[in-house]
Length: 422
Image 1 (spheres, rainbow, N blue to C red):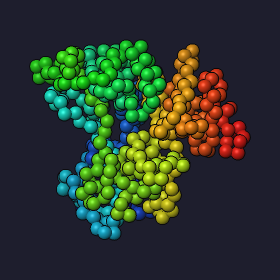
Image 2 (cartoon, rainbow, N blue to C red; image 1 turned 135 degrees about the vertical axis):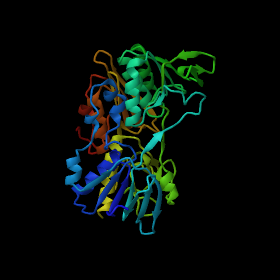
Image 3 (cartoon, rainbow, N blue to C red; image 1 turned 180 degrees about the horizontal axis):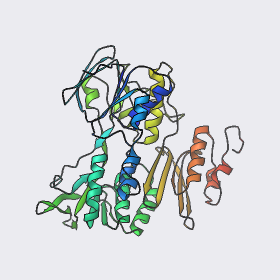
Image 4 (tube, one colour; image 1 turned 90 degrees about the horizontal axis):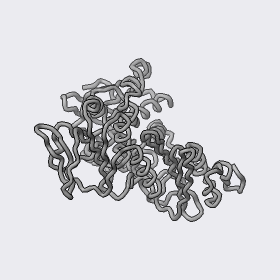
């Protein structure tokens, strides 16, 4: 058994790393163990489908911190250990048991276990050449195979699928992207943004099929050879990449009696239903942190920003200085030569304003509920993104009629609650 008790953080993700780093910055002096089941040092995931796949950055540049940092801050980083059972006492302490037989005692537990790739139940999904992209091992395999294949089919038109498709197309592969829904990134952006992304990626040579009904993955000998659709069409593929969303890893939480509903249910301080255990990041279902959000509204975010900000709130709670998690959610997605930035949540919008400047390659959609701006999708338009994000944080307004002119700077027309221009 590990001699150190203290805090055991299960999951060496962005959320887990940030929690450990924030605790030490706040003066937390108890032992910290940061445990991950992958045989890699803690690393950042967003670049796996983009810069790393394209060879723009190395494996080393994905690593969060040096070993010297962990040693200096007395954070015990444990790799390649999968926890399969937790014995937890009523005071929140206990012992975690790993598959290898090791035991890790803790006084308090933090779950930053993230989410896993959603698997497709299709004939042929287990063929060699059919891949998912969620972790470093997935990325290493994809990067090794990409140079020796010609035709790639990507199943899933969400962020991961589009990012990988754009990267592979840039690398000279022939790419077909299959999306089961009627538009791209349907859960995250509005119709205007979806249409813009579709137009752009088709113009860059990606064959995008919407409302695609995949029947099976076709074998050619002992490996993948194509993807068959319900209408009988078969699309040739030397490699199939599946990106159809993720499933939060709630199994350990459920096994110790924590409330779960599309993630581990936590309060504004990242505390789970037992009043002691902390849950942070992609696995956590939390009260909507947007100022003024409806009472009882809950969300589960899959974003670096949320992992970082929620981990900071959790660190304050652990050190006995609880601070409400309030903030403006924001997200980004690099898709070839497009950088999509999203500020706020567009759910419940009643009106949109489109700002399109084809000469400069900029495109933004502003979302309003009544006269109040609530979110924006900004493509290659960082000034629009920053203006909307700042306005949301200040509860300021951006008049829709003026915002419709793409030559107008949004910051210049933002009006604060006191009626002044920002």
